Image (tube, rainbow, N blue to C red; front, side, top):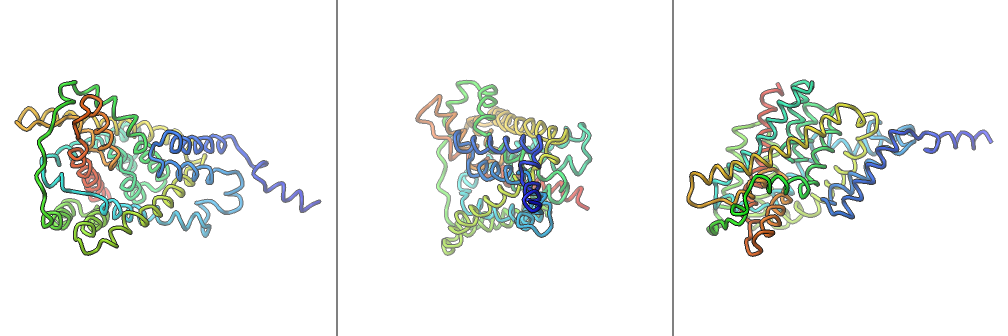
Length: 375
């Protein structure tokens, strides 16, 4: 009987708390949005399930939680904490990215760069809300809608906020189809939405091979702090474009990125326990993240409209929204939004230029912060 009572004391039913229930319900909501609404299911399903695992009553008490040294989850979380997973994801992203549109129309780099204004605006907003300078810099990266970069940078500058930052960044990446369209419609006219952009020139294989090498050297010279992320991104792209390493490129953009995505989603979700997540600072982070993403979207659209004042070859301002780093979700949103007004207008290839520029831009912005505040 004594052993039976002892067993009952260890069950989750007797250790359940309101905060854990709230977080488990939030995890179920993430799973629902991923499966039923198809909001980035590759992200939301493992994150949501991880939130259920991390907040299940009894897991932490049995020494199985992310924070318990030597547990399975703590070993898996090591890749998040030390920036291993984000770097591997960048390699996979590079192996599936086509920089041709950016090479063919380099002025669209400006849209990807301008959209990073959301990062610096959020940095200032975080300072005003009482976060210290390192925390504010980490929270600011959410404005780029780049989950891997947010994790990589947050793990170095504000590890105590890493779970909240990662969850906010991935949540807004998943909500791109919800957040961006209203802003795009608000800032453009019907006439602007049907602008047809000039056909892109054909980019040679030699240009595609040289681009990742030259781009890596230039961007890493500007922001050495982002060299690891940029190296993995451009190496993945070089594997794809070289034509002689297709096996490696295929592995990077399929098996490798899939495995890492599952691990990063599960462990980030498990990290967001009630005692860490249900706090005023986390609420502030989520509000700042929403504002950052909205500002980044609006800035890209507005700058595209400004560029049209000085050029004959007009840019459809909708593609400015793709300047955030959510690849390729933002480019798909631009395509769908544009076709609501002209079914025969194909914007996705043009939108990929600022989209991939945004990936590079957010990594460079993180490197700038790391160079200023990391020492």
